Amino acid sequence: MLDFNQRKGFVEDNAGLKQLISGFYWNDPYYPLPVNMTAEDKKLWETFKQAYLEVGNKLTKNKGQRLFIEAVEAKGKK
Image (cartoon, rainbow, N blue to C red; front, side):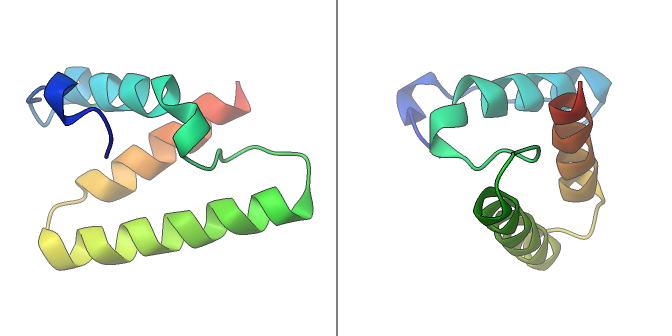
């Protein structure tokens, strides 16, 4: 997470999910993207995704982390 001084809270609903997706893509130079051209980029995304979901599952029992990853991938396909 970057720019801690700019962080905001969010509600766990569709509006909150959209807010998270916007923040993810706004900071895209710092995160791997889900839709890329090279095999190395795809491998990097899969590694990021797996680690994100693994840690998220340890921290919370809800499905928010899975919804977030799915939404990031859906936006990347557009």
